[in-house]
Image 1 (cartoon, protein in one colour):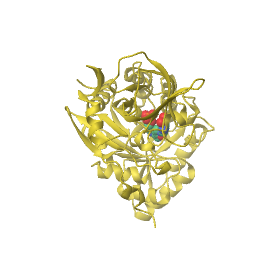
Image 2 (cartoon, helix red, strand yellow):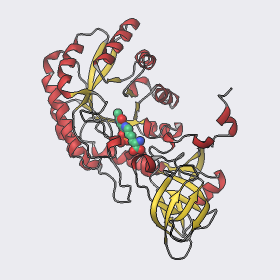
Image 3 (cartoon, protein in one colour):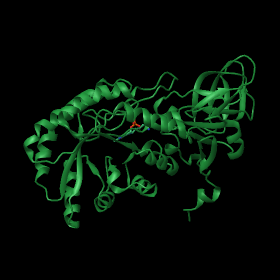
Image 4 (cartoon, protein in one colour):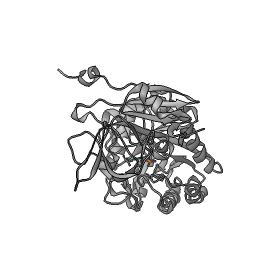
Length: 413
Ligand code: LLP
């Protein structure tokens, strides 16, 4: 029994009662299903089976080492976005040749480290960055493997905060300037231009723009065919969305049928950098009801011991996450605002949600929280980072302890 299910009156993760886990760890706690991660990886991999491809899991979605090791074991490579994520990759056992290094605003130190390691590709964001990588590589007497991140000026039809592929976004080199830059880079002794890269945005449910972006990169490949580059791959970035309302997930098959026909004529290896699709549905955030209040003329509130410090998505993107009672009580549902304990009105996990009767100390779970959940947590209000648990094969274990107060003050004078 894989996944999060409501059976015999309580929610379980891969058959293990959520209440049992939360009772053991305390709350707030993130709980992940290894089985769901394996299933999502297999589904995506299978959808692209007809074309040579490599999945480079986007660490930014969730970079807890146990999750990284699980994905590495499935054959995934790494998409790292910072020096810290490169370090996470190495600690989780990835080889440098399995790491692509993306990110707008990489520092000189980060670039030098990536050059020294010899990562599979550093995704170049600008002319200036290309020059800096070239110089760093020549100083070390090596050639750095690089890919050019192209900004194709395509609207991904997603939330403006997570849309990255339009002219006015800070990411990549505008497509009109890409061919000229590629020709310039072909002669550099410190660079091997091995790929083209694009990332349109995140939580994309309409695969049309992804297909258009793939065609744009394929066209660019043709345009620079005679430039003397040794292109090996096209990296389509991440972005495949999921159904946060419980509807079927974004479809890997549709995704593949939008991208593969565009890339096939180039003959280049295809890289994918999925984050959300692999881990979002595989995680929940569990909190406990700290208080309730209902005054006439005001919303009825459920106040949890978890909120924006653990899961900021609802506040930052107006994101919808389903919220359920872990052990539903009998009785008529009511409409509640489900809020956190922080001193901010924006600390609201769900507006006007129908839940059954809820009492103080009951457990509540926020679903589809496996991506951009823990990784975006903060210590605001001196709150401690929550614990994380992985359920695998019917047993659970803590993969990250809750921060202690010692951890919280460790680096201070
Ligand atoms: N590759 C690059 C270069 C990226 O910037 C991203 C995400 C990904 C891959 C993975 O995208 P995914 O497959 O997960 O959509 N915090 C936001 C999402 C930010 C995504 C940033 N880039 C959220 O909670 O919705």
